[in-house]
Length: 430
Image (cartoon, rainbow, N blue to C red):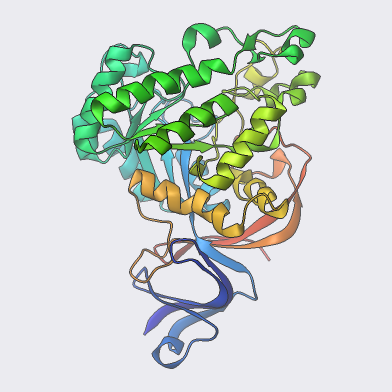
């Protein structure tokens, strides 16, 4: 007897190249059958049948880049609120950066976060281990022990590892462990005091600029280190044409490089900063229109593999300061699906490519469950209405972090239900 049977759903599965109206059966938390049209025979017998009414049913989103303020700053975002926000966003699994207080640079911290999340329930929480002790960039952390504890990769969170020798050692060890290194690519000496993208706009606004070259310089350096170590290397939140070009060239060479970006970098450009609204202060900064178009093209052709929320729980007081000293970052979970679907509605990418970037690719990069509706896979699902309009308002977010650069913007795409292991973890109110 099947536990759940979803019928009359638009099935979207890039792993099987399925985009058709059909049904999906779930037994003991796993997908047991999928088919086009209406179910027949044994598949009809189910404990519970859910008529999706033509809504889209896809693999749950796997978000590669989420910051949590728990432990250390739970007033900004605690683990229960983060898990609820992820579920409401159609996210069935996400990876947390290690820049908590204390830093996740040892196995005990990974065990603690994983245990707490399992007790709360909801989406799967994956944890990145800190690549260097206390994220200081000077000494490699205990990455072997963290890998044994379940770390899905290693990163220095919101800063690059500047020391090339330290980076080489981290990449060499990660290669032996077959874990990816996730790098925020920004050459520190060029970006340390920067406030926005370096351009005519920054000069006009009187703000200190961060050149686009700061991103590409770190990518270029690390590509050389990939050749030395054979490490799997992932570029986080790509924002520039130069960065895209470097990644495309490395992929053509056959190197194991992957990349993600986030909605601000394909929907906004540096002109948004002209109002000095600190909601537009991000890291990396919003770039030129040419850079934005290059990012869209790279998503479309697969040079950029994944789309992540880049969710940052920001302190409201730290955002009310003048633009320069204001904290960078913004909330991203609540808007991830609808903003990604904007590329579909603009016919820049297909719906299948959207879910390849939101689910299949990140699951493969991190080697975690998700990304497929194939029989035998965990029933991690999102059901959504792609054409239903919404007005983005931070006050309506499930996340405690409610500052967004898309405040007041119209969007399309509403999550109606999220399932993890066949269990409903979010249901939109009628």
